[in-house]
Structures are given as structure tokens and as C-alpha cells.
Amino acid sequence: MRSPLLALFNRSLRLDARARSTYLVRAGLVAFVLIVLFNTASTLAYVGAPGLSFFYAIVEINLWFITLTGLSYFASAIAEEKEETTLGLLRMTDLNAVSILLGKSTSRLCGALLLLLAQLPFTLLAVTLGGVSLTQIFAAYVALFSYLILLSSVALFASVACPRTSSAAVLTGGLLFVMFVVPYWLMAWIGIWVKLGILIDGNWFVRGVNLVCAGLVNAAPFTRINAILTTGFAGKIVSYQCLADLVLGAAFFVLAWLSFERFAREQKELAPSRAWLATARRSPLRRLGFTAGRARTGLAAVRWKDFHFINGGRAAIVFRLLVFTAFGAWLWHQMAKQYAGRSWVFEFAIPFTIIMSLVLVLEITIDASRIFRLEVRDRTWSSLALLPMSLRTLAYQKILAALLAKIPTLLILSAPATLLLAERLNASWHSSDFWVGFVMVLFYLGCLVIFQVHLTAYLSLRIKRGALPLAGVISYIGNTVLFGLTAVAVRSGQASAILDGSILLGVSGWLHYAIGCRLQRHAANDG
Image (cartoon, rainbow, N blue to C red):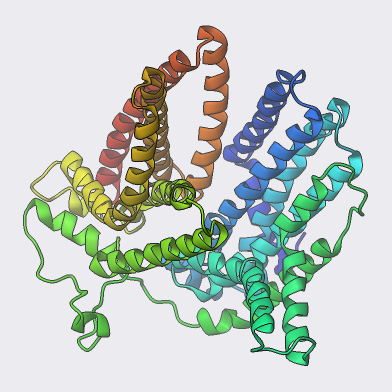
């Protein structure tokens, strides 16, 4: 293949095919399929359609893994070249914009498609378990393939338009939100406005907006997957969702191609990111006091730098408080309307506590994936090592700065969690079984979060991109295997939780030591 158009694509494809990590990831995904199959086989006597439950678990994990991969792996296609100031070198060659886009993005798409194809032969075992047909399996994988193509194109456009991988990931998530979530809300609001008489039913504007929103809703992979995984599915393998995602993917690829010259015309060396820090003298944020203020010295200097330059400082804290408060007010209003005349406070506290806990864990894991990686990318560990403090102290100061930025989430989470716990205490404070179960659940979940954070931070120092989704998959597979082994060994839920948590803490301790060793290596080699 000597075509100049496909030169970079051919080279990238060969490098991916020869890389050891490619085969390790494929083997890990196949192992995950076999683990889910083993768990399904152990519950054959309790599940009515074991094949469908097995296939549902596989498709659900693939769907979320593809989404996380798009936000990290695909979104860094062009943005990482800008960060490393190597995009100019690529443009000095005889490669045009299409060649660079094909080589940097389409080669990654081919690798991701091959990962899905590696699971297909093992997934066909769901037919023998019962409850699912070949049509459902092939329709689900066609839906996943089309969604993967769309996601890679959306992330490619974001990677071309943004100067950094982090901003490209945010833009990718925002575009997906606008395409697949906003139409639901817009159709609901139009229905309310029609009932109130603000809009006229049947108007050309209302019909046009509803038509566009319905088209985007039907193009969403979640809508198609839910329809496929219903019992007695008799639809076609290739659906509207597949064709719509392919058309949208082609449109975003063309948009990335047309905007490539505009966003990649000049290559500038990027300074370290300042997040939300207001630097302009007449900035509205500066007038409100949302600036870094006076710099600190000593140990507080590292904490001050990370808190303001990486975690956004006071402006990010106020923004989080406003967003979380608005979400809580909206959920409070919905519950008050749904449970009119009845006690609905605890019905509000349960989902809000769960959602905010997930948000807190997600924020912590995202910070773990970048808290050390940003210094590696900017090659500043060797400079930080010259400060009169140990690398361990530096790392702890950076962690403390990240935790300070989580104050809004903790404040918003504390109110409904305290309300929910008080309700349970009033009902079960005499029961010793409640306290034992409560402590065991908290212990296991805490150990699981600690393990996830350490694994994400360690992988961010070992691999260039994709540490967060890879850590999620490894954590899911490892905990599934660990829970199955300990449940068989001890045959007690509480003892299994203690044993699992202790093992996770032990592995986290080893990862903690390994992270320190990797930081010392980077400090010695980044100069």
C-alpha cells in the first residue's frame, strides 16, 4: 500500500497490530466475556432467560466502555500532537489533511472495531443458554459498530478544534449530550408549552422541531439497544439508528477535514493549563474575586498551584455549587410533584444521594487519571524534584489540592445522606444486623474506591492515554473474579466483604508504592 493518502494510516495500523498492549487488551476483553459467562452459568437455576441476561451484561459494558474510550482514546487523536508540538512536523511532510486524519483517527477506529469482533464468537454462546436469538446478537453488534464510528468522528472533530486532550474530551461529551439527551428534554418541554397554549400543536415549527428531536432520539444507541434486548425482538439487523449514526459520523469527519486548516494552521507551544483561572486584568471573574490571589510559599506553593491552575480554584467551586444545587432543586420539585400529598422527602434523598456519590467517585477517579499525568506530559517532574521537599510530600500536596476542590460535592452530598441515615437509624437503631451490614458495605465500597483511584493513577503513569476506561474494566473484571472466589471460599456475605476489602487494600498498598517508584523514575528522566 504505497498511496500517499494512506501512508500514515498504514503505518499506524501496523504499529497497533504489532503492539503488545493490543493483544493484552483483546485477551482481557475475552476473559471478561468468559467471566460473565461463568457467573451466568452459576445462576441458571434462578434466571428465566440466562442467555439474555448474559448478553445484556456484555452489551451494557461495551456501550459504556465505548463511550469512555471515545472521551479519552479518540479525543486525543490530533490534540496530543498539538500538546507535544509535533503537528507541525507532520504538516511538513507530503501528507495532506485527509492523510493525517485517516492515520491518526481511522487507524484507532479499526483497532476498536477489532476489539468488538474478538468478542463476537464467545458472545454467540448466549444463544445456547436460551432467551436470545442470533438476530438480536447481530443487531446489537451492528448498533455498537455504528455508534463507535459516530463517536470516533465526533471525537476527531473535537480533537481538531481543541488545543488540548482534556478540552477535546469535554467537547466530545458536550456534543453527545446535545445530540442524544437534549432532544428528550426539548420534546418534553414542547409538549408542556403546547398544553399551556404557548405553542400551537401542528404548527410547522413544532412539527419540524419534533421531527428533528425524534430523529436524534432514534439515532441514540441506548434507545436501539433497549429495543433489541427486549424479549421477542423481531426487528431488522440494520436499523435507522445504524444508518443515522453512519451519516452523522461521515458528516463530522467531513467537518473535521474542512476545519483542519483553520485550527492547525499555526503550531504554538502550549503553556501548562490554568483551568478556570482568570488572568485578564478586566475579567469579570477577577472583579468578583475568583482569581488565584497572592501566591504561596513553602509546602503550600504546590497545593496553591494545583488548586488554582489544575482544579479551577474558587470559580470552579462556585460553579459546582450552583450546578449541584440546581440539580437538587429540580429533583426536589419533581418528587414534590410526583408524591403530592404524601411523604416524598426520603424518595428524594435516596436517588440524590446515589447520584451525588457517583459524581464524587467520578470526580476523584478523573483527578487520579490526570493529577500526575499532567506533570509527565509537561515534563515538569524533574523541575519539581529540585524543590526542597521529597517527591512523596509533593504528591500528597497535589492530592490535598484535588480534595479541596471536592468541597462542593461533599457539602451537597452531606445533607441528603444525613437525612437518609437518620431515617434508617430511627427505624433500625435497635437492630445489630443493620449496623453490621451498614459497616460492611461502607468498608467494602471504601476499599473499592481506594483501589480504583490507585489503579487509575498508576495506569496514568504507565500508559499514554486511556487510563480511566482501562482501570474501570480491570477493576470490574478483578472484583467480579475476587467476589466469586471469596464467596465460594467463605460462604458468608459479611466475611466475603471483609476478605475482599482487605485484599483490595493490600493491592492498593502495593500500587501506592509502585506509584512512588514511577514518580522517581519520571523525575530522573523528564529533564
